[in-house]
Image 1 (cartoon, rainbow over the protein chains, first blue to last red):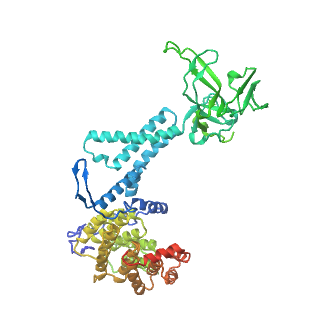
Image 2 (tube, rainbow over the protein chains, first blue to last red; image 1 turned 45 degrees about the horizontal axis):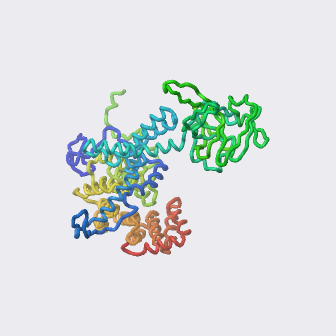
Image 3 (tube, chains in turn yellow, orange; image 1 turned 90 degrees about the vertical axis):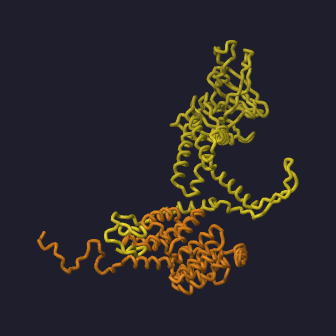
Length: 360
Length: 259
């Protein structure tokens, strides 16, 4: 039997060539059709390949740096760094690698380790989606923590954290990384605050105790806060009428904008009136505790809004262990700066998730 | 079963999986030749299919494995090519041609360290072929390491090499790494040596287009005439027709030697 590769004459019946080790005759069937890449994958690869060409975008010229003078009290004149260009190139490559590692799994994708990419990016994406799904709840916070931890771990390992020898150095770097990664996630949470409705607005399909998600970017003062919009407002310090006590503010809760700056509103027979025109009750509901009031008039100062809600306020007592009383604040004038975000999504209950009307 | 059923007479019975009467039987060499013709026509998919058919006829046929690898690289399916190279190397351990093909796939996949390693391994074997030198040249070009010219010359100077096809490959390699001035000579010569090859004319046309030469249109037309379905040539032809002042300026700059 002659070897197809080295043409060595082997003993009949051998499976591999004695001389070069090539397979003589395959007894078991061998797959002969190569694996193929779908067209979309080829297109994606073509797009990301320039990113993977490390240091190809900027290549500093080779140069040498010669120092002159004194540095920290030492004479450094005449010290020459021959490979300054190479050093700069390495630095650029390093920066590029760090930037790539910010996207979970991207370094492995660019390296062609698709198996690791699928696992790492899949894990991160799964946790991220769970975080989004349970956003605003305890489970959401747990998933946010896990997502941050996995993201920080991926960044760390893509940049050689596993090669750091001493455990305390590794721990310190990991903690710093965790803190750094936590920041953007915290910014996401700050950009999309969550609050629970206290009033029912049938026209917008909102029930009491529905949770809404706001978006800070949707509030641009004073242009786009229209009458009827549900916004997440920060409650100010308030004096409870007739009781002479001050209530500490700071709670963020959804409120409905009823009066715009400079307007005078009247509440009569369970309906708001602006310039004598009654506002429809299903779109501008009056809080329950004010529905029995005969008549009330509100003037909205400049750069402030009259908002309606039902804030439950704890009154301070001498004995801090006892909650003495709760007072309902129904209609409040909030300065424009206290309107933090506009509610854009009805978030809980899950089955009623959906967008709120942009122009109620 | 009759008692004469085991007797060996000089009879010819068609096997169950043999082709029907009237169709020519093609062995692995014929398939490899067909694959080579498809490659010259610029139809890499067809070439890959032919190499697979060659392996269907004989699954330990080295040119079939090597050809499949090269076609996967041509089709820009580099991770698949690397995977397939590993499989081929299981059958033919440390075969220089397979190692060279793997080096090219690694180099195009921007993994220069591995590319150099595989190329070194391929070069250290006893028999060096033109393709191994060509792969070495490409790896050096991809890594920006220089001395690629020497490798290309060695590839063409080997006595056993299929020189016209190799010259075309050398020209295409220069072209791939935007060394248009270096590519022009081998590509012109390969178009003369392989006048029926659409790939040769297309490569020459692409090189001429990059240099802004007036004969570009004729080269690309010739490629389209030989292979009317050649999408790359059609696109290059249209791009050449619509080229603007920036393309002309780039072509003028590309014409400078030793860039």
